[in-house]
Length: 352
Image 1: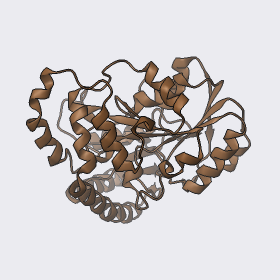
Image 2: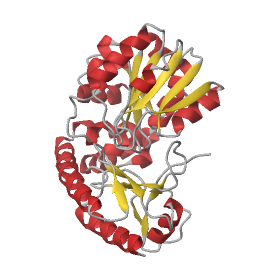
Image 3: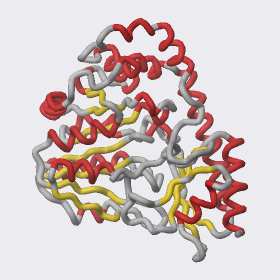
Image 4: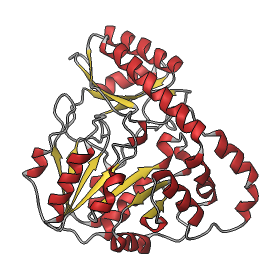
């Protein structure tokens, strides 16, 4: 079963969606213009090798060789292809986290284990992973992690990757939310890929650029055999023309700058407001969302969600996340006006 935010279609009302972690600046103007300017491209098949798209991503990342990049129909497709391409026995996942890692292992028929490595403060305890070092396995870490917002030091991940290499094991680092962090790009594992042929980084182009509907993600690895195996498993034309045209977003410095300015300001403001609400405990975050624990015994996350829907706001419960209690919820960071509505609604619900 799929557990994700953004499920607004089964509710017959207009809702302010705090359940999905999308840039509130929305679709970049550069993409809107490119879509109109290139509308005639829809009468042709897209380039099956996605050369221009990969060139744009490579320049954005500072990578010289475009052959190290595999575009996908969202980051989820890349995750599934990595699991399918590797000759491994097991998938070991840092939890609580995104549910599709374990589902990808399940679909492949692999054993998987989710290890609770995030403590009550949301900090990552990598030593718990160190006690589970195994050969011929894939280790998965989301950085920053969804739903805790935890950012793990890139040097620690690099050291971990070296240990895994000695065991013929691999490390997948999901950086779907890395561009929202203050330290980006210095905290990205992309900068360490040349040292680690057993590491692949997965990105979701549509989280930071505010357009998940086009389904565009990509994987990066300097392991040519892995890249080749992934490409051989992709369906032809797995990205349509609307995704190909999105190569322009990686050059949109105005949008990138405004987005980073927004998240830096709103994350601090919203965290201070959330900390002031009695009855809620808010985890610090490096991403564009907050994990919150309800401290009242008279309702859990599902009840809280229903109460918030009555106030025309949709939040994310802990459903689908292992190692979280029913009292955990997650909310995205949006623009100031929306964030103010969220705070008022949360206070009203807690006071009931």
